[in-house]
Image (tube, rainbow, N blue to C red):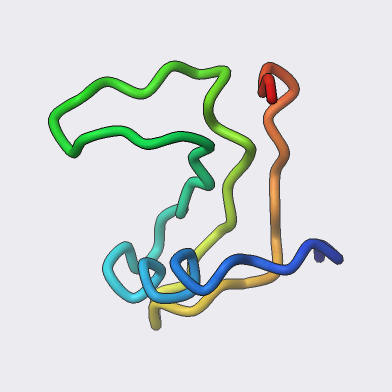
Length: 64
């Protein structure tokens, strides 16, 4: 479990990626634009119901 609180956008997006991960992206990127690894702050795991499990993995390569 993570004590990190996910932004509202992450919670909403979880419904669209059941059984996957929702990534927290730092910056403004267009849907067709590649996202550099250093712009990914971390990711939350999503269960099969589209709800966050509480598991969060930070990205050690993230740069602010």
